[in-house]
Length: 312
Ligand SMILES: NC(=O)c1ccc[n+]([C@@H]2O[C@H](COP(=O)([O-])OP(=O)(O)OC[C@H]3O[C@@H](n4cnc5c(N)ncnc54)[C@H](O)[C@@H]3O)[C@@H](O)[C@H]2O)c1
Image 1 (tube, rainbow, N blue to C red):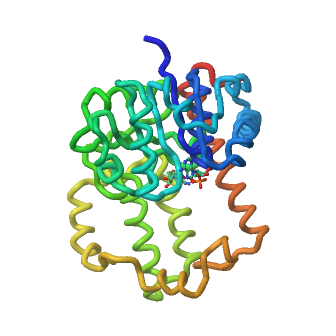
Image 2: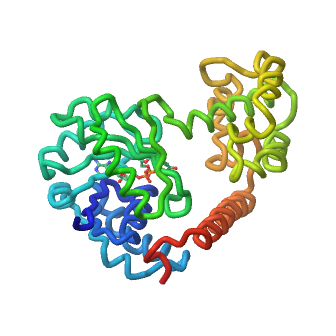
């Protein structure tokens, strides 16, 4: 079978990274954005990433930006949308995309939290539509959650899982289209408790992060919670839950502490203060540290399981 042709809609933070990973995996990629500036810089941004990561620079030759949506999707076997997180915008785009694509083209959305069912509801052929939730930066974080709706055909799920596996990603099948899918549900269950610990005066924000980073955070990349529960024993896990769960934060909405931060304009890095104060130098140092950590993890993965065609 010929290598599927990919169309990426949106050339922002995520879109350019998705295009990069597909091109590196040997796919021809067209990429569309409604903002001319985004399109004009997309090849340079990808080329810089490829250089920075020591990946095959020739991958850039497989990426073709276009300012015409029809031209972008017309010949594609697989279309993935990564425009702004806005439901009516995504619905409108998919309705238009559907009028231009080949009969068997698969249509995917990279939304972070919007149910795929809501985005794809208006399509004529909903069985070919699904969600693929990548993580930032797409060329360093392996996971892609593959989310089916009640309409998605099993073949479309299988093809999409294989497509992502073949380009070196770690696809995870989400069988029900629930808000937050899997990753963001887990992540934000932890954040809810993290905020509550600060809200209730149990510790300050820096201490929450220190406890995670110096304790179970150290193990998390190699030991998931359910592996961990089996390792210590489900009986011990049950005993712990009987004591701890009744005390853990369980409110259904956002914390008033978080709402007040936002109301006070304490927006985090954007304003220089959120849960903590951040100078520009501290922000840059943290970003660099995260990037370096992810690069080292990818290098380790590559040594264990080299992805064909990745190295230059
Ligand atoms: N940033 C993350 O960490 C992250 C992670 C996973 C998923 N996502 C999701 O991916 C999607 C894109 O996020 P991002 O961070 O890349 O945003 P972004 O703002 O960096 O990029 C969005 C792009 O969409 C373009 N756009 C807006 N309207 C458009 C239209 N009508 N037609 C074509 N292009 C249009 C913008 O010009 C911009 O280039 C969102 O749904 C977001 O929730 C983001």
